Length: 292
Image (cartoon, helix red, strand yellow):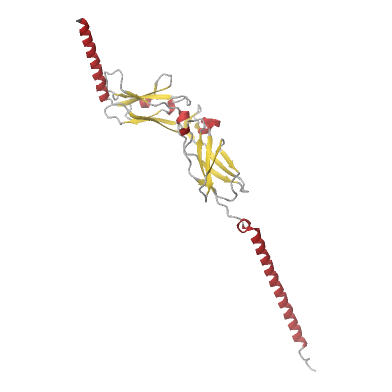
């Protein structure tokens, strides 16, 4: 008899706990659509829906380490949490839990609140690299075109509070992919360079070329190797010299014609001058002498 009563009480307790959990889930809905959003190492955790009569608390940790909280993400009514400062080990992988809790000042008898765990995230391997800026320099002899790429600043700072750029973070692992074509053509070529100063010496002299640049991280998974592509920029088009436009044969022929024309004009002028002098001389000899 006692065993039956014990079993009955245990079943009742299980049912109570079940309904309490169900009730808690109704009062504190779980977060949905949890995802990481990170560009240039500014890393946000986002989710939905917007809370009404409850709040969210975010806990995060490096895999295998104790969980931490960011002060601004405790009992928040927002649906995002900036974890940039918390992810100090850039190469590590992190996960985060979003707990649905009572609002500030509201108590609850629940010991464990509904929560959702995010996917793993590593700043070094997952953050998106933004769109770079660059300038174009063409050498005076038109034999070399140089792209000067500005390394993008990040949301990270060193111990001296100096902002780091992506070159500071990735070092020699940072490369740039250059896509280029002649301004009057659709055919494209690509090059990958480690330096932020990219020299191109195989371009046709005097031609205008158009360029795009993007960061390239070869060590990442294939779908995360490329940064955002830059705006397109084109080098100036050089006006062809008279020799390039007409060719030496045409120019030589034109010069010969000009010389012949000038020679003919000179000959005509000389002949005309001689005839005029001869006519004047003949006229004077034919006049009668005065007083004879």
